[in-house]
Image 1 (tube, one colour):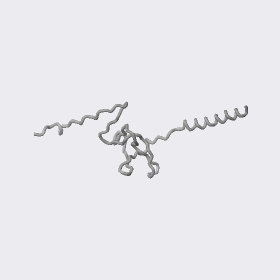
Image 2 (image 1 turned 120 degrees about the vertical axis):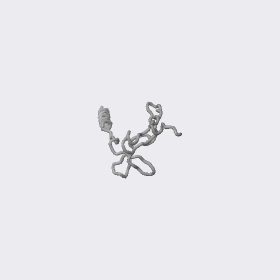
Image 3 (image 1 turned 90 degrees about the vertical axis):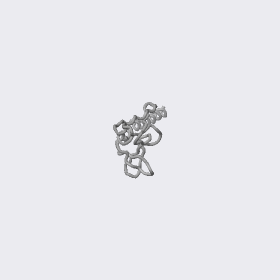
Amino acid sequence: MKKFKVSILSLAVILSVCGAFATRPHFDCSNMTQYYYAGGGYSQAGTEGVNYVCTAESGTCTYYTTDGVTFFPCQAGTYCTANCFVREDGKPIKPLKPVTTSANTQKSH
């Protein structure tokens, strides 16, 4: 009976430690300055949705750093600044039509 009590007590301690780790808050890197990797170095990415988007592809889109030397992956995807195809619900969306202006609607004579 004593071995049974020790087993139950050990199990309770292990479960409580595991529960403490499972409920602690996770680190959110998206509020930190974002960087992208290009040409053997890291550059500031800018503002997501304004300067860049992360497309739904494999790889790492942006990175963050705490010391300016070591960079860690933050957002998954591919870094894209122009003509980006963003997938929604697994279906590719068509690119937007070019904006029509008076300069590109005039026919040459």
